[in-house]
Length: 388
Length: 235
Image 1 (cartoon, each protein chain N blue to C red):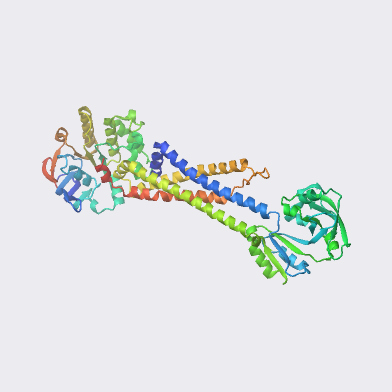
Image 2 (image 1 turned 90 degrees about the vertical axis):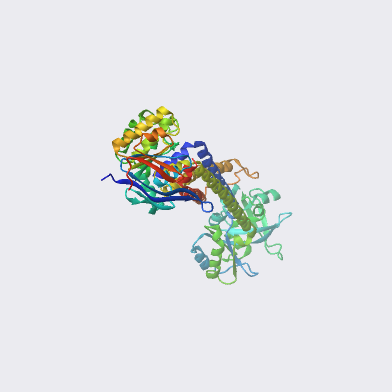
């Protein structure tokens, strides 16, 4: 109470110095939050664009025969695995489109459309026509439409067996989709399972099980669990990380550089506060001498500076949090993706990052005050009086 | 029977430095009674300020004992000493030593803020107002301590030294940088307080006119007491 009275008065007596210190801390905290949010937001956006609309775990046959028999029981078990959000069964295979003049190889994929939409989000991307609703109806991607000049109602003549050129199945285009990935748009012909059963003659067998999980980074562990406990031999289970090692190491490098930037900003803030408070102790040594002569004990004297550190820390951090969020908001709102015209990153606040940054900054400010506080506690009255 | 000694030095010596030693005080034995009014005189460098600092427990003697209100202060730890000083001693320094961040009134109540950890006990405010009236500063009590004259600052320091109602007030050149009229006013004030409250005063001064108005003159030369005249009675 006494120490806080003195600390507050010392700070308010020199408002300009106090303001600059608080502003300096605020800038440091703001940079930390801005950089942290930016990198976090960038990673989240990139991750969402890369794997948001794809399965995180894909289970396929490990042999030459792509068909999976007796899949009902494993699929049932996988649905119950903790962390799994969606399980979709697929029947697919390659086919030639006999009435295409070039690039005639396509991937015919049969789904339960409503179920598959939970992973792939096709329904929202259909920009012309409707989703396939009955057998032999199909939707194709934007690139395929442009390349082959297709229109609604056009027929694709599909040939699945090279040795039997006259054994074809006709499917009708009822819609066009655009998932934003050219490789998918130009290759996938999406239809109902009833169609693929008929075209490939798989019967009730499927060719792959697609799984999406709640936390994409847990996919590898979940894949291991699934592989060891729930699928019969002869099937392979692949998590997205195994096919995106470069993306992951990029994320890791980005995170490490973020931590480095944050650490250096923190160190400079701490050094700044510590040296400023050390100067303040010298500036106030006369006052400290008087206070000690009147009975202020060493602990009270050091508490004055610890409290100054805390006031700087709390004031600077509060201001810095607002400033950092404002900077990030400004960036997210104004910096656009040149390709799509949408925001380059989403304005999503990571409160964990903000709270941790704020807590570390406040603690660092108090620690920075420790050495000046010790100096204040050791200050001898007699030195001050003798030196006037 | 004379009055009790409120402050006593027994065989006090002070040596500064470890390699090159400077003997600042040599075997000083002095006693100051309750309600006494004494002056310590001496030339610059004679050791009188060192003596005052040891009397005020701001400095420790190399050998010897300091007893205040019957307690050996030389054995106390730093924090215990700080508390003891707060309750028993008042200081008036030559350069006032007011806290520039605080008003006149706040400077006066500072010893209480220190003692009671920032909370002002009942009655202290009234006591401070009374002391400020006594030293004639009621008009300027809410001004910043740097916005008043040198004489007013010194009177503020006097009011501050008295607030805790200490047994002893130690004054180092209390009129050192004041003009003769103000010097006389300050002296009269100290005398009046001495009479009214029974506070013992020990005044270090080089001003003989002030010294001659006290009840006892102690002269220090080369760290020794060379003269002790007046109504003094050593222990």
